[in-house]
Image (cartoon, rainbow, N blue to C red; front, side, top):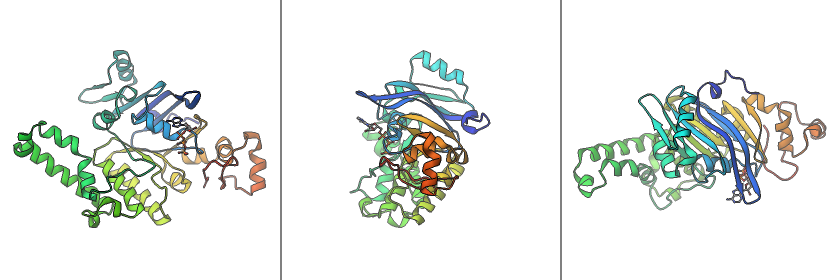
Length: 325
Ligand SMILES: Nc1ncnc2c1ncn2[C@@H]1O[C@H](COP(=O)(O)OP(=O)(O)OP(=O)(O)O)[C@@H](O)[C@H]1O
């Protein structure tokens, strides 16, 4: 299914190779390789327990993978040779005027956000509930501000560089409050926002860190249809106008099929399908995984359930979540 003319083959922003993550005797991610195309919205899907969040946790530095390489590339058409040289060097990253490469499996979560430009949101919203909406966006830019202060008290009060950085942080926060329709709630505690608005605030907060890759863990969870449609518009805007690539985990197949340029399907920690939305939707292996049956039984189950060939709508037979549109 890999057509080499796809953007994820031609100009990847992220290359995951032979990623394996074991927890004791359990292999949650098993020799997984995939690319995320620069400027694509890429969805990682699969039934409950397939390993999606574990992949996210490896990419964003929350877990150290048992094995594998996770290379983030900034700049257009970064040559593979640059990644090979970095791997041999033992360093975490290599930057020049044109290109930068980062080996995320060697970096801490903090440096992955700050240096490599990978931001994330969580399945369970993690905002500072007692802070205002605006403060949440300013805190996200704290590290940039501290650097501009020269890490001194004098810098905080006096340096023009710090004043400029503080003004820029406010400008950026207000810009993203606008894009996420939260300007009128800027002074309210984040915990007072309705659920859908908290999800938008999380995305705004991630965008305030100037990411090149935005990783979203179930951004449509708990949203009503109108909010899901707004989320689609926001993610397209981020992709198209901000030159940010998006990697998302999502169970809502309506969202996935509508906005994804590229879909990777996991089951039991292994990749079972990888392609465009149309390619993946019609792949019998994907339908089987969602139905929780063997490949050979798919047609029978589809007939029994009256499922149309272009998609299925059911819950996995073994109780795992995942609706095909
Ligand atoms: N920290 C951990 N320690 C032990 N096992 C873990 C840990 N994190 C995940 N797992 C196990 O790894 C497997 C994959 O879990 P993971 O959360 O990555 O799946 P998922 O595809 O994100 O599922 P869901 O759709 O339910 O969020 C599961 O069997 C899970 O129990």
